[in-house]
Length: 276
DNA sequence: AAGTGACGCAACCGCGTGAGA
DNA sequence: ATCTCACGCGGTTGCGTCACT
View 1 (cartoon, rainbow, N blue to C red):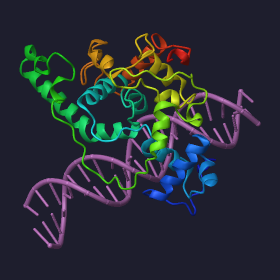
View 2: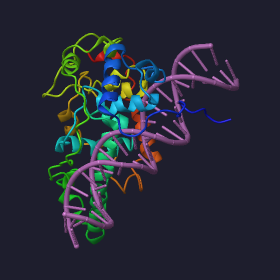
View 3: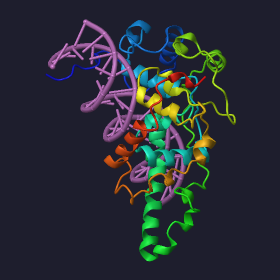
View 4: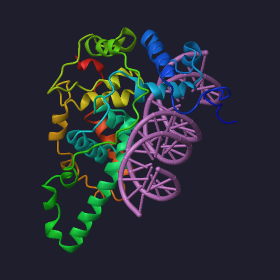
């Protein structure tokens, strides 16, 4: 039987988005809110697939997206979370305010995976030469040796970005009702200059597991900040070390089982209202 | 200056899953 | 209980840009 295509592809634009398309999509979502992606293109007058619209919005046009260099802190967090979660990019992105799963995935594939591989090879070689010296060079942590360089993404084309400053302001101070409806009314607190992770709950109801997961990473305070997570030594949790504890891949079933266990025991916050 | 390979980002594709009929 | 629909996610690809020769 097969799945019907998400949309008829006849007559639809593909490839890079134009400034005009971005503006149309942004204006439409600003006015009507997210959701109903399937019908959105028709209603907005876009010759695009709904999926494409959704992707464009989530990965590029959303006003709260942080673009540009990924900081060393963020990088370390990505590495740690990847150890913990495997290729659960959306979950990882949920811990990094303003970062998208696509961006993190790309960053991992182009930068971090290589470095983690190198690191793994290096430590494996070191271990084979001298078991006693293992991990000393990493500064005692699981990530120590590959985070010293300043990360600089290549300057890329930005000419097509349409930024609506009003929208940005609205989003930061009081989110548009279309985006924040069904949310708790109070404004998220900033901790150390970072917003608590709200992106999961922005996708209200789409992924209860990850929403709970987000909340429950909050160490009981209903708040999240980068430094808190960085202070967590995930390596202490069950000897999570690439190439050792879980075999060849952090995304192995064992990692999944581990994450599942976390979700089951420590991460069953039933109420999304703890962020308030 | 031109050619070419490598790199990185944006976008696409297909599958899994939950909700509703 | 089953089916369909819509959405979200992760893997992959296409293409623009950069760096090197």
